[in-house]
Amino acid sequence: MKIKESELIINPDGSIYHVNLRPEQIADTIITVGDPARVERVAAHFDKVETKVQKREFYTQTGTYKGKRLTVISTGIGTDNIDIVINELDALANIDLTTREVKKDLKSLNFVRIGTSGSIQKDIPVDSFVVSEKGLGFDGLLYYYEAEKVINQTYTAAINKHLKIQAGKATPYMVDGSQDLINLLSQEDKVYKGITGTNVGFYGPQGRVLRAKVSDPDFIDQLVTFNYEDKKVTNLEMETSAIFGLSKLLGHRAVAINAIIANRANGNFSENPKKAVDNLIRYSLNKLAQL
Ligand SMILES: O=P(O)(O)O[C@H]1O[C@H](CO)[C@@H](O)[C@H]1O
Ligand SMILES: O=c1cc[nH]c(=O)[nH]1
Image (cartoon, rainbow, N blue to C red):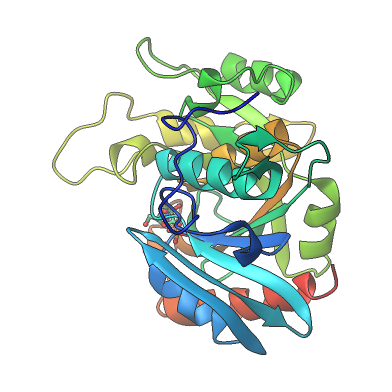
């Protein structure tokens, strides 16, 4: 069935609407970062770069690292941007943009988020790395899709039993990351693993109070004490749950690895977040070269 022009929007140069890329410009393994400046810092390690495209907050470079073809794209902040990036990259891989029809043979991409995050557990210090085994979404994005099957219903029930979510807020959901990618990125002892909370904001939604008071001052404490099958909520950021959810829904694999730049339990912030992120980039690229 032909997808209408209003739904699948193609630019005059044959690229897809927001990310401005053509199908041949993306690799099968795609690194997502929030900050467009981080794209340069990832691609600086590439052996060669074949594509550089920017539109809005979506900056992409495709090249090779140790011979492995990789794409790195910035998503900007938040799960609303993830909806755009994952859907458009999936369309580049799995929809024929000329006939506007879904291809018969579908491709499975690897999505790897290399991000920054705040730890909520005392024993996960700043400058460490956390691999997300599950994304805990406070964003509600996934409820706009037929996503019951990709949601981890057992963990979702457990977290909703544990938290006291007020009426009017989206029901939290959990989605698993891809086990083979989790294993690849967490081979070393220095890497922590856990459940990553994805919040709809940096301040109130993550329990930060500057001047505006929050509606549930107890929220972070509730998250800290969640423990199910020995798994805890380790860290908070703003994209992982949607990346995991949409990837799973569309048949892709996904993982997230974050540099911890803030420790909310101890109240401290990394003295050198740039160095922490650069270490994370180097570590992650070397693991991805093995894929
Ligand atoms: O550093 P990035 O990848 O943007 O990730 C984190 O930083 C931003 C907030 O400062 C949010 O996007 C959050 O997820
Ligand atoms: O605490 C933090 C740090 C980085 N990014 C977030 O979303 N939260």
